[in-house]
Image 1 (cartoon, one colour):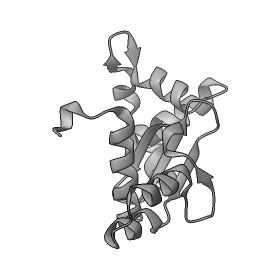
Image 2: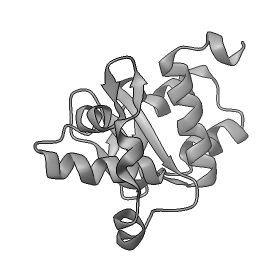
Image 3: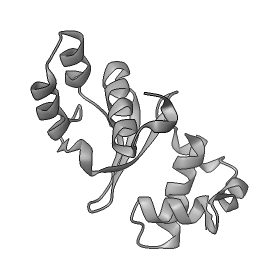
Image 4: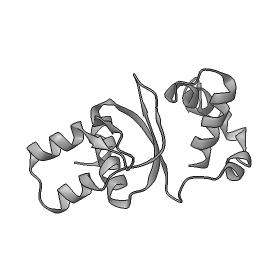
Length: 138
């Protein structure tokens, strides 16, 4: 299966397995619930694959993806994963983020700023700016 032929769910499942393997930091957003901010995934997904878990076991694990702090969610509910490959940015690093790129369009008619506000379910412009800084820092 080539990269351009995968579904958004398949893409997110790959990202979740990779994050489980690396125990990398990320924000995970959902369409119908509050996002998980600055989390790391449990190594369970990766361990199951390494030890040859079958399709049924993997389906169970993707139905109960667990973070390092015990929060559980379903892979099918994931909307966007914002990865931080170099670790979580500090408050100082976030304050230094250049917001000019926030006006760039990610799809026609939708700026990065608008996207961040939508995917993080921001209540106001101040919260949207904080989340935009996270996206741009990633």
